[in-house]
Image (cartoon, rainbow, N blue to C red):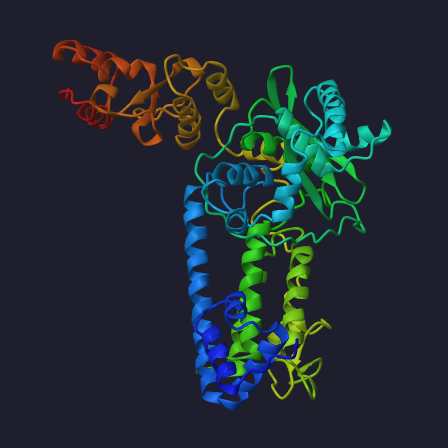
Amino acid sequence: MGKKHYSQSIKDEAVLFYELGHSFAETQAKYGMAESTFFTWKQKFDKAHPMHEAITTNRTTCHKSKRHLEKLALELEVLRQCPCGRNASIDEKVAAVNALRGRYSIHVLCDALSLPRGTYYNRKRRAGQRTSYEINDEKLKPLIRQIFHDSKNRFGRKPIHHKLAELGYKVSEKRIVRLMKEMGLSVAKPCYKAEHQKSLPRAYFRNLLARQFDQPQPNLIWVSDITYIKVLDQYYYICVVLDLFSRRILSYSISDSINTALTLAAFDDACNLTTIQGECASHNTDKKLQLEERKLVEQAKHIANPTEGKSQPAEIGLFDEMVLGIQNYYKIATCISLDCRKLHRRVMTVLTNRLNTESGCQLVREGGVMTESEKARFGASAMVRYVSGINRPIYPIAFIKYKMAIGISPAVCCFSTAGRKKIHDMLEVDMTLFSGLREHLPDAHSMEYADCRLSLLAVQKGVCSISGEKFVTATEIACHLKTPKEYGGLERYSNLVLIHKKYVPLLQIGDAKSLRDICRLLKVTKKQLTKINTLRKAAKLAAI
């Protein structure tokens, strides 16, 4: 049989028939040519008709976009009917495909759930069969459960991982977590009582220690912490103070409640053990140091880049005023030089970096001539700096020496037992009265009421508020409520006053004759009677 010949019109007709959306199989069945022959015709047709090629390309793109949209709509319909999503586990996806396979094709279902078809068919082929991984899981579960129970529900993934390694099992921590979750095993965590029910706004505190745990001398830096220990069914709190130089525990305190007294007791004992030249070592608080540091650093930045309307000498003058203010205010702290040394290093770092230019650093050691007062205060310091071209010096915050406060004895200190004794000696009140009030707590009254009695005794200097006579014993003291409770009076400091017990009947309800008889018996003066009537008026009683 000879070779079949096609005219050009037949070739063009076959190409146009294919372009109208028919498949190649339909085109071949109608015209009977080979596949390679047909696509040779199409290639020549496209070269001979370039505009038709563009139209055909657009039509093909439109058909592809339409098919893509139809596919997306079908996948969206599948996702709406599936009980799981694309982020579900493989087992859940396989179960969803099996549930919908009669309504949609496997291809559409797998694409909609982002499940490889090979994975689906592998799962289907080995349905009912257990893999070696699953068999090993069943062997590991009893071992993990036994280790967990032997540890009294304390071991998590890391300890169990090491225990299994000792038994010869190499198991990853993620696998242990998964198996513990399947068995419902969870580590028992200690319960604690939150001290604050609401979040408190707290300022950010920079790490001043910066992991400098090795200190050159004792009592330079102390560290402290509070933790709790469970003894039987009761929690106890312990506060420890440690010296970083010797690693010695200076003091500790234990209490069944976490409060300020717990911390003060530990630091009180530490200060009693450690003194500097017979005086208690005192520092500025970290919070205050950080506040002053932020102010100085901000002003140091203004020296390098002055604010609008100000010059560099003016900014330096403002910085010097801040330095003098800090030194004059905090110089009575025994460790002020140690605290200011940290501020100086931070400020100098900022100034050096900010004043460093391509031509060199503008921060120099020599400059203009100091005034007489500046020479007296900073003339001996090698830490004074100048800005190149400006004669005004930058005062060093670290050049400061501790100075004893005028009129205040260094031995008087509320941070040590000896120092508090001197404070008590100057109270002008017999300390036996304080002891008596503390030992005999009032019944049916609040702790604030008992506390206020001690404060009033110190304020009134141990004398009666009505007569001015001194109390001899604590049993003579009566704490009187100015406004009674039935009229809304509270047991607060402002509503309490200490009087002698013999005046109590005059502040109670009684007939006028008996009250006047008591006044004559006690020899009440006119001034005392005025005070008594003032208290009676506050209690809504008639005047005597």
